[in-house]
Image 1: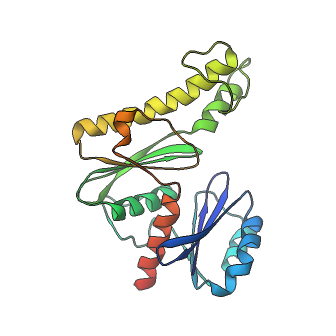
Image 2: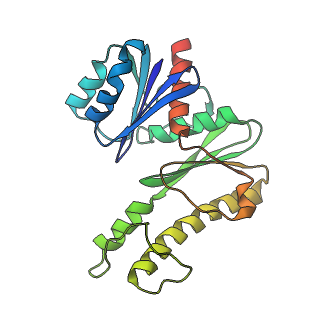
Length: 242
């Protein structure tokens, strides 16, 4: 069994894998809570991988290094089971790379667009021969709500849950419609532009926030909220085999 840690900007996630199958999943707000959930399984775990987009404290790193199984700390210099068009900078998010690895493995001979809707929305572009070309980053849903509140004097902080219609009838619905429709149109715009360049494109959608799509686009979209964890598991297997 393997422990796959995906540490994001706001949450700690861990998947337990047997081979390529995820058999359990934990999502918590602290590392200590994740490790408490993991404790009953530790005797069965043989290796693990940690991917973190945040800077971990010395204490947190020690907690992970002191597990009773070997840990691979994933970074941009970790060997990957895919080709890339350039050297990755240290600033490139490891979660982005992991999602790309899994998407490339799940398809072949078609260009890919990998979209992760979380704290930020990331867009990754992969050529038909499986080469990672790079990507873009945009503010996520909660960041957009928070920015409207933080950088104005009168707009309230609201969330995505609540009344929603095509045109807002008050400040709350205007903000909610603007943020949610804005991000949906942004994502659909990327997909349409990529489809114009190559109609064979496949889109992999992951992340914690759901998006509504035009029915015409759904046929090219594969949704998998565990894409990053699956990619990290594949990277761990690749390095264990080496």
